[in-house]
Image 1 (cartoon, rainbow, N blue to C red):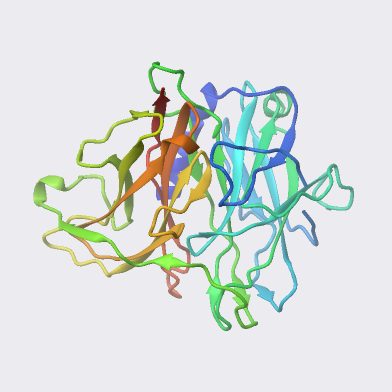
Image 2: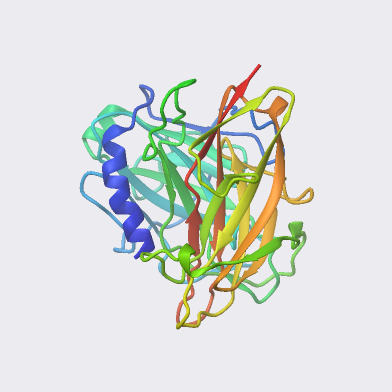
Length: 355
């Protein structure tokens, strides 16, 4: 339901999106590069594409589907998945693309193909990066034209015997930023994914992501309850010392910007929800940023009726004049009954840096 709701919201969002003239694929620098930069240069690889109805689609919005309907097995070689995408819209639309596995953003490459057979490439294979930028031009959007992409990656950081779910995550209209000293369109961009295929890890891990496990807690009270909440984790980005959410804050150039990452589960006096292991990451201008004691990731065992917070700082010297800060939270489920993880994305906090 959470993902369906995101698509319903997206139906409205896409009516107001705007970007450039051509279909473009580009890739940004890796996660530790300067957050003020977004370089461009595209390119990935492929095998068979299965057009089974495992995608999620909406008339007048964005839809995409994976090829894989049976488990993929990792035996040390690169994994290749295939994705069909289309946007039905009246104007150009930008979209950032990530690959997230168990809350971690993996480097990957992309390549565009002419059709669902994935035999004729339309682009070179890109460098393997954390983040790639796509553009769907107006003609492509108005014609609701399908585009076909391969996604190649190597999941060599997960334990042998584990089962993971590689999720191609899309941030629609991700290049939106409010004008300096202007108002904020709170529905301008949105991040979402769909249920990914299953990936079985048959090799020993070669590397592991550094993950922070230190955080503060605070009890939730009944007045904090939201009548629309369910058992899914919620994520928020706040100005430190102020629990009221703001859409835009200002920072002085050369001074640190003090923020708080906050996640929580449902509040309930009567129902009991299981502890949910959750991995969160702070995205600054669409890139993971190492705010958690030198790590880009924070792992939390989230219980109900509790706020989990982590205070951090951004160096304003690394920021642009206008910036976007979000939390990406992945609630790990992975049971046989409910194998898919749940994504929670905070509403963007826009940061204006002044001299």
